[in-house]
Length: 427
Image (tube, rainbow, N blue to C red):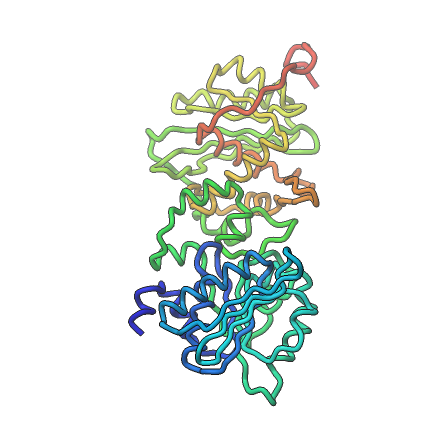
């Protein structure tokens, strides 16, 4: 149908024209899930007079928005609307909205709860199913209505953006092979003609896990790995990394002493990509020796900027490094805010492939061990389990290196450094 070519993008048309009885769509936000499912329902009503579709949306607003799209499709397909009603309890709660067509077909939108879902023998759309309340109960209530052999073979469409694991939508997507599956990330949609500004979207989100879940269709849990192995592997290069001799250098240092490693990393900026060219592991070294090693690396005139961990025991080392190396040293105090910015930037670098690292098992495991955790109140923290090699100190050093190269401003300095003992004798 020519009209569908004009109004639907390729991925939307592929979903609409897929005639599978059971169909599931894992789609990014802002890619037209409701637009496509409303098109299919209205088109089916046009071609099959007397048919009934029931739509369960996550809430009243979503239900009304879905029905608005259905009415637009009815007008575009010239299917006469005989009546449109919204039934409410009192003046507030919508209990259902209904479109009745002149050919006796109907579309009914009802709240997504187990009680209202029972009793309908109809084709079914579960819109944004991952965020329905009590999805397992809804599933138990509604599924028998579409599998009743006396009512014929009803169609089932399940569409949603993911919302972590442990819900019915994730269960259907990963475990049920009876469904025809359609996955559309924001990148897929953009490639197929969706007019969106990806950089603007991403800058507005400013959170790697939200971006991954809402737009890249990854199933993110409250506690999740910051850098999956596949992201790390895509940025690994075999052997040692080399860079042109005149490429500017940057340095990041995470400071440890007895339990944790001190790690110094140097990287070269080449064409918008940071190449990790040097990793210095300082295990149980006195702070004077650590400072000496850092100064030796930074004596290279190509080194433009240095970010040094100034948290706790690192404060004095950072102060001395700044005194010796001057203003190109930025002491960075790890706080919840600064760690959030550092590790969000680390994730973005791997997603965008703007960092290259050697294929090294210890570095890979350090990066993979960092966890992003969200509390019940919405606070985000980053942590890594302690091992014999510290707690992801290489990952912290790489995050500092990327910060040094990005020139994104300064995290606050400590107001007061530790006791004024001479540095060589400190700690």
